[in-house]
Image 1 (tube, rainbow, N blue to C red):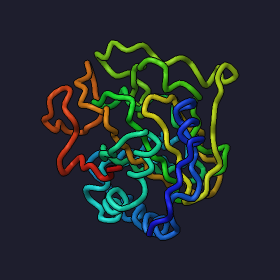
Image 2 (cartoon, rainbow, N blue to C red):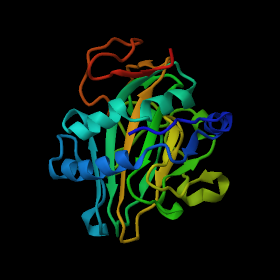
Image 3 (cartoon, rainbow, N blue to C red):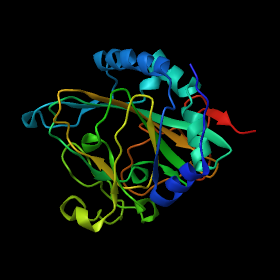
Image 4 (cartoon, rainbow, N blue to C red):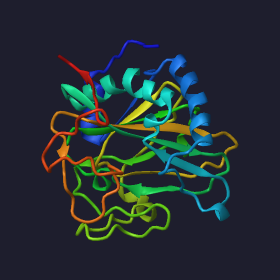
Length: 268
C-alpha cells in the first residue's frame, strides 16, 4: 500500500520558513479507501473523548475523536504502516518519528462552525521543535474550506489554549491570549491549500491555524496524526493540559516511549 516517499529540500525549507508544507500524492488509493470505511466505523463507535465541536443550532456537525488507533484496527494500521511516520521524520529533519496521538476530524457538509485559530503545542505536555502533525484528508477539500495557517507563526511564543466547545481559556497557564487574527486577516500572510485524497499537510505544532466552516454538501473527513522527533520531551506544563488524555507516568524531560508512544520510523 506504499508509494515512493519523495521529500525535497524545497519542501523542508517551506516547512521551516512557514510552519506548514503541502505534499501531494503521498498516500495511495488503498490507504484512502481503507480509511474512508474506518471513519464510518469510528463514528459509529465513538471513544470516551469524542466530541461535537459545532453548536447544533448553527447547523451541520463537526465531529472529533482522540486516540482512535487504540480502538480501531484500521487506524492502528495507518499509524504503524502508512508513510506518515517517515514523512514526519523527513520534514522535521529527525532521525526518528515517535507517534504521539491521533485525532479524527469530520466536518460535515453544511457546517457553519469555524475551527478557531490556535496553536497545538500549548495544549500538549511536550517540548521541542521537532513536533509535527500530518493532516490527511479522505475527501477532496476546496481551498476555501481547507485549514488555514498564519505563515511564520510557529516562531511565535506560546499562547494560552482555550476550549473549543465554549471558548473559555485554559486556567493557570500564565500564557498570554492569542492575538485577534480573524478580524485582522490583512495583517498576516495566511496560507491554505486545495487538497485531494492522497495529499497531506505537515505542520509544526506551534503554527497558528484554524479552518472555515464547510458550506458545501460534501463532507470533509480527515485524520491528524501527531509525531515527535529527536528533541521532543515530556513537558510538565503549568495549568490545564489536554494531551495526553491520561497521565503516562513519565517524568519531566523524559522521552515519550512504550506501547502507547511507539517509535514507528528510524532513518538508521
